Length: 244
Length: 262
Image (cartoon, rainbow over all chains, first blue to last red; front, side):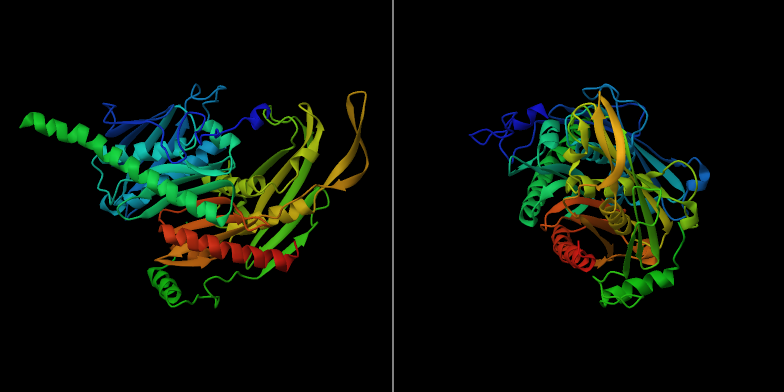
């Protein structure tokens, strides 16, 4: 831990990448980027570069997994071997298995699964480059890809992390801030229903700090939500204008 | 997944809406907790936890291994969980599925993030040799809330764990007779909530788990800090419910720690 003494927040209150405590990294979102998928989205948050694709609703294989009263949502979160500093084995790690599960569970409440009984839908997330809070960016992209695939949804799901570094509660942690910081709180939200669909935490927070982190993450989610809607409009509303 | 009939689902939900539960507990009551330590002599530490009819044993093994390159002065903690087929008709033999991996990672996070083990004291030679603590969670009977039972059993087993004495002779680690207690500094307690309709209950048993919309687990350390959280299930929580669970989790963790005298 040679870098342990490095300051994550300087005297002016700015973080290593020059952000204020409640500032998001620059975000770029694009919808409908893969022609084979039924829906897709690409997101960049800072150095994170993530692709999400949807295949389905379609017949589920193996068939015995199908449910008589609703659609089965499956999710695979996967990191490319070149996405991190040291090559990651392409075989799914325990972390990826867990994240696939929590991402799936964060998207499930938003979808009208009961509209498509006996079918399945696959969500594939590929992290091309990782720099902290990838599960959050993955959820934001995957939800857009579901919307792009025309799946009936209650609301979009948007996710953002908050955490504590150098004793301060901050928004949207980078990889360095996650590793060197005191705590990380990833949170996913359905903004119109004010419903939290993913909540995890590791680190040490007092109740007051936790409350502050949740508030900050929700605020961050609402900002990203506006960008999510904008990205959908860019694909769908602009086409309509051309037709007129 | 075993099914609960719709009639029973409705009954469970309606009772909870009235502040009652099928087994007579209050909404924030735990089932009876029994902890027994040192049940497997071959293991360096072990414990059995009974949470109502849920039964989990944890055995720990201490081995000498290499530290991670980014933490050369720290011992290594490895948690694994097995949902053994004899514990439930819904468990199957085979490689760990997402449920057992998630369970292991929740238990791991509670211990790791609370800094329950003084890992620096597990260092033998910086960058070369450290003690590795293997924590293996074995679920023997599944009657709901495996998370709290496993986290408690893991902590109990670690508190019961002994490391071999050693000395370094010409760059070789020599094991000496006798043991020292594994250095433990904190006692994280994990409290799990289930949301059924819009009500929160603590320590769901199996039938309640099959009816719940979502669950939320929080690990609380000795100073009432939150050190790990995991939401599960395909439902959601309102922000104010999350804060409410954090408050109740703190009370429950304190209660359990007091009862076990940790």
